[in-house]
Length: 274
Image 1 (tube, rainbow, N blue to C red):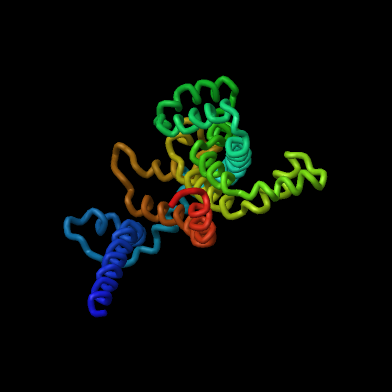
Image 2: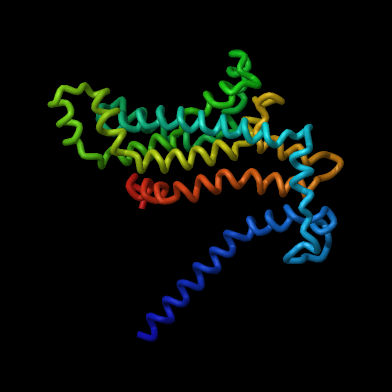
């Protein structure tokens, strides 16, 4: 009995230590967001700033050259459009790979998984050339459409649909539905958990995207991550505004994650990942 208590205490101690380690970067962001340049760059570390500098937020919002408000709006538009498009494409692709057992389907599954082993940065050059030839530079089409296919999301949906009861689809077909109608009226409405989980992952990834928006985006479609990089120049780094901007940029995704975290856990546990 005593041994169980000790083991339980050790487990909770490890969990608390890991939680504190996970929260450390967020603490640094909050601490530096309300600090002055001198406090951040001081050789001696203080757990709290000497005085809370509340003018960093005003300085961030008043900086017209950065345009943090417009940048956050652009990021929101891009993230929502890319999430919706990626989920629609991936859910249909995953369903097809799960239901059709032809050799071609297995070959396509292999190609899909192979793309996960290809570094994304190696595809940026051909994607940029095609996007530029289509005239999509500095447009939301250029930001969203090239990233609307996700091999990871397709694989998750496939794993989920492998365990989805085929009897429900057969019953819909007997009632007169065609495969397309059965999918959208029976399968999709009963897959909200995995759809919400994948949507959360894609939404956060789209919001945090940096390299592709840097290549395609200009002033009209500058996203928040690209806007924050403007605080780092060859002359120096404006740490207070940078950390305050990072804090502001984190808040929307933090709210989304807290709201959808139960769907995220549920979706991943029902998609074949243990």
